[in-house]
Length: 259
Length: 251
Image (cartoon, rainbow over all chains, first blue to last red; front, top):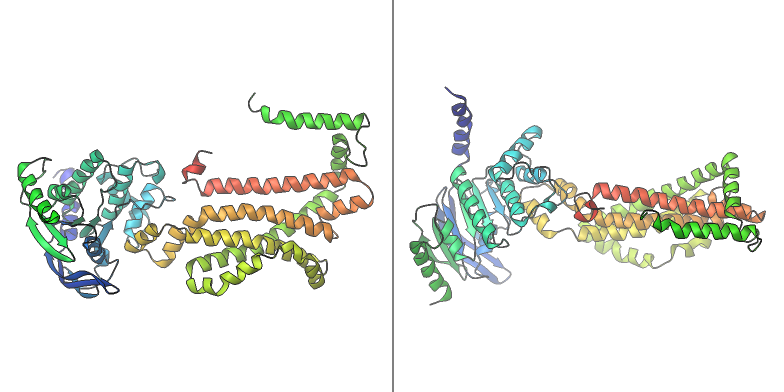
């Protein structure tokens, strides 16, 4: 038996224990005061699926994501992760539009924030270094966030989200603030770690072409309801400008623009 | 060459001053020559008087600073974190802030006499406000997005304080610290000059009674040196603690 097989073994084990979780929403409503933002959403997301949520601003997509991340509580209805309606918050990680790194902590320590209280001492450092290697930032562990570029900061934020091996990863417009080329690189990176880890990915975006490039399934939210549910069955990695993708994008845009 | 440039003007002033004293243009009763000041410095250092006075003045300064700064820091943190505490105390403190603390000297002498308590009280009161105001401002200006991130990533309240709130407020706290150090020396000078039986201010007032102008000038220079020293230490500390901030990293 050779060494590489031995070292691969724990990896498969990790994959099994950390693979994605099912998400199921039943009658989820969210109101702020008298203003209802989400109207009784029923939704099932399969474990390991890559789902994109698109819609106009104010359609409730960010609110929905905050509920899924456990940052807010629904006004009524239930959210279950793998059938559990409570105690699932640690299994979900949220990536924000901004990197939101602690400027006074070095890169590795920022990634360790994602571990919260689970791991101890030596393990924390090792896990942080591994997560940084996954996002291609080996060797930058001891830098201050201030010296990194926007794309690198967002990759540190991705490492921070990945380090605890979440079963669900939620992204709130994670690429919105990046330039076009960095965006494409980050899309590829997100797709690659998703394929490696097998978590359930939920991305909120206003960019329909990004949704088509990444997702297995696209949900269009309109006035707090799911207005469209599209399956994107295209081979990966998807190329920009593929005609089948363009057709799907066109359909969704038509619906969004009310044409 | 460039390093020498800023020293040309002070050196010239010293030379002119020395020459003016030497040729009798400047009376020794008004301003003694730099050499006379240096001699006076050596005299008071040798008989141990200076060191004793520096020691007692420094002790007063930092004890008062610790008391006033400590209370200011705690109240600033408390009022920054708790809305109830802020509503209860902030407007009262802002009202008291409008009283110049040196205006309280007659009252303080009535209360405490001219003992140590009077000086500690004045220094503590003077230092309290800059530390309080800047700590409060620092806590309030901590990035809300970072706080939300910390909660979303399951950080507990204690961890949020030490890893997000405190380091976020630190740049502002340092502003208060350096401002407070300035007020600390200023208050002490005034308090020691008006009423004291030891310390640098006492040395100066005592020398005035005997018309020893050179010793008076020495005391003034010692105050300046102590103030500069405290500020330099604070700057060093600031640069070490805020190394993450690109503004300080370059300096």
